[in-house]
Image 1 (cartoon, rainbow, N blue to C red):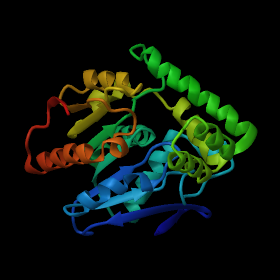
Image 2: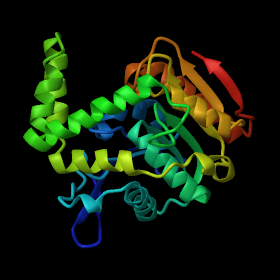
Image 3: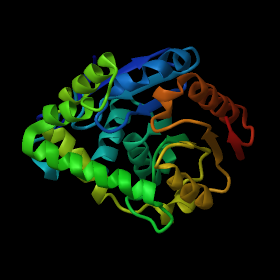
Length: 279
């Protein structure tokens, strides 16, 4: 797994697939995950594109600073800028899921000239908004509870707690391993980043002039944020996934791939992207 350093001691790890001369597509994973979450996407993407997936700050093999002041949504966006500079990529198609979508929105509103197309799945433009519903807020309440578990017992304790409610043995083991792979510092730093990020809603219409794809699952508590973004981005392609929860690239990989590849093809062909679809 290649890596590069920022400053003296911060290392960013990433993987890439496909022709290095093909148009680049950068994939940003979700909270507590790693670039492994994109395993269902990189094969189809690599047939036509240069797919690049980093481990985000505090996740996977990328450095997890002990000092929580070393986190923050701007730092995540700057990590991405450094990755593009390292790979000598002027502009890319940027895809972010959940926490990765928050970072993608931050990056795209800060550096719109470096984003040729933007795809955001299972995500939100702000931690709080009047249009968010009780389901969204209940999910955030549970995530704050998880922070307390990690502060007291580490990520292993959280993995054990999460696995206790899962009846499938393999799934329970996968949950324990997922949380074991992220340090307590990485977990708490990313969690703090999620809560303290700025409200980007007022910037969306002005800054996101590139083609935009917004995806959400009908059964995802975060889906109310999809409507918030759609209202600000009337030219976006909005795709709602029936009977789907959080994490569309993993829970509905084939359908997500079809939607993403169609969007990217339309962008390349200069076709209009505006649409509202259910799949």
